[in-house]
Length: 281
Ligand code: HPA
Figure 1 (tube, rainbow, N blue to C red):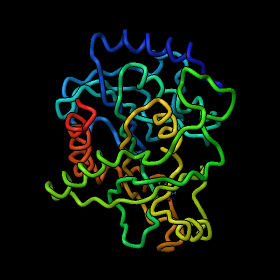
Figure 2: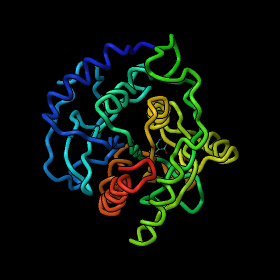
Figure 3: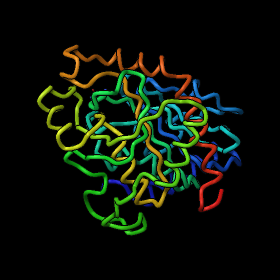
């Protein structure tokens, strides 16, 4: 792996200085078109990504260049507003560096969100899907390369990687608040081109409900770091060939904006629930 413990320590140290005494326990990684502004953080403080050494910066439109520390649902959170993808030419070890830093400063919980193409027939743009499992079609892993033993296991267990207790509680919360919430399997493809209709038929056959180009690497690293994980996809478009319409990045960004309200309400619940999980607040 091209990431070392020394780099993580250095980045965590710099971040702690920026945090100035805040002690976030929940990290959030926001996907395309989802902004920290819509989450309604209280007491927000912007931390430029450039102030954290070794952290790669996103190059894609719709992904921000700062982290935001603040409070959400009475929990201290740290929001990575924007992520780096493998298709940007960055190794997955490096692309997921930020997750190691979140863990190093004390985030025991990770919420990962993304915009995704809907494969399940019933999914429409705006559908929210709790990720219950994933398929890694990136052809790569952030754990490839020499093993840094202080990072955790070399052979990371991926059973129940999306925390079942957290997921069930969120389902109940969504029901109570009447926020429509589906659940399903997320497939990660390399991109950056969208899929062909044949690829989508293949993905449907092997059990995918939604498709995107992210999230899986962060989840693998978070698992190695021992974090508890909740994943959420916003269906931004019907996947290729489902409706016959062409796909565009603008449509993906716009869907994020359009779904901001229910998404923010759900994420507030997702974060608040961490205080009730069995491992204790
Ligand atoms: N495919 C891959 N990634 C995506 C899509 C899609 O249809 N929509 C948003 N991200």
